[in-house]
View 1 (cartoon, rainbow, N blue to C red):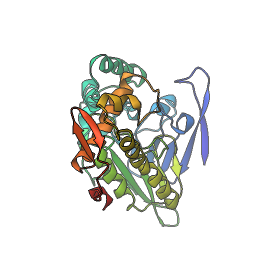
View 2: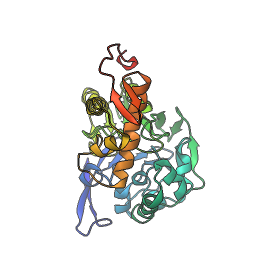
View 3: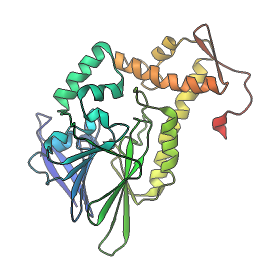
View 4: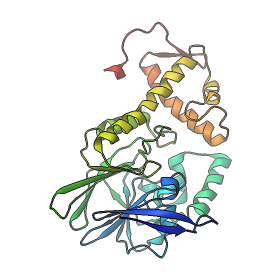
Length: 328
């Protein structure tokens, strides 16, 4: 069943927001299928408890039309995933132990990004004013494999770091009316877009992200839900195709980087060229993301013997013929 609700909270012009019921789950779709700064949140209604996953700006827009919630489950601590937590002050708030400090204070959240100077100050104002951030000193830490039993519905945490240290997917399981087991995986910011994986923050890690994507290939489920853009995917086969396309952007960036540094290049040259964002994308935030992201690629390329660094310049090893450890 798909319903709509008018969104007046973040736009002068009303916009119909969709929702979809799927057994004990209600997907609250955001604007443009959850395009940033919006997202797709999930309400899980068990016989004993109700949980909301990643309450976003679309949840804020639905204020007054939301069910009573007993717990908030966060896939990770980024501003767009916590914008609606302030609406549930009496609900317990749960975040992975590696990210939980981000919910305890605005400074804790800013540390996850690693911005400094004026950019840090500007982003602080954005988080507080546009994403309604309110710290939760009482945040409860969960670990990988923790099971939340809501009564007839279970939610199992699957730690999938890379985007952040604590990024987590949730495996949600229940029985339908025919007593057949059903499974949905909430993917958080493993968003399966053409942009590819984002690992440009201080608490991001490229190789952790790759391991997380490889792990998700082994998970069995009928449905898959992304926080941004793609929304609900209703076939594991389709999910696997999208997952590989998403993962391949890492190889695409790395290939472009190796081609670019066939001539010696400084890190500033690499940052200016743009490999994560489109050429010409400006701004100090984009600079930091490029520097961190390409820095991770370069670190392992140097380690693997595929790139040399001399006089603060990186150069591809054109005579390198042995297979990379990654090739195996």
